[in-house]
Image (cartoon, rainbow, N blue to C red; front, top):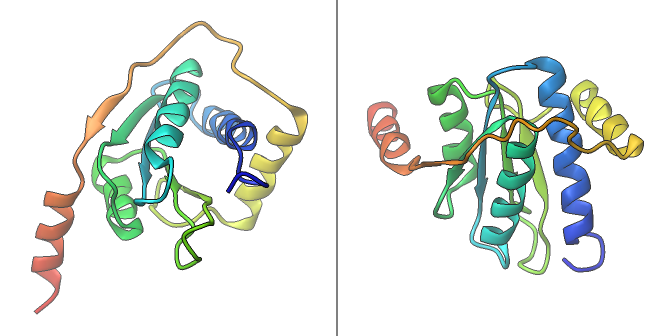
Amino acid sequence: MAEEFTFTNVRRAVNGIAHYVKSQKPEGARVIVGRDPRFLGETFCSMAAEILGSYGIMPLVIADAAPTPAISYAVIREKADGAINFTASHNPPEYNGIKFSTPDGAPALPEVTKQIEAHIAAGEVATNGNKAAAQQLDVMPTYLARLRDVVD
């Protein structure tokens, strides 16, 4: 964090993701925004929600830290158009990262990542005035219930 994972780079990445989502679903898109408990996670989520909203994409913000599988499950359950997850997974606490999941709840495949990277390289930002307000989402009750169903 603070060397490569900066506010500026997070904004660039989220703008790229938002452009990709809009290219896939021009109207009515919804993207889940979540995080793990790392430093500034809430701030990154707020920033992502604001950027998504500026594209007319409804951000579904998970208020509390949540594990990646819970966020992935929420994408499927909510029939969302993807998820932005601020996490560095298994890396040490001084790291952070962004995972983008597609509507199937899985990590973006290389062909999707290349499209997002192209939008980032182009420096694209929102151009429409249709702002979408964020909604809160609590993923843990349904995720834990699902785990109880599938794990003996």
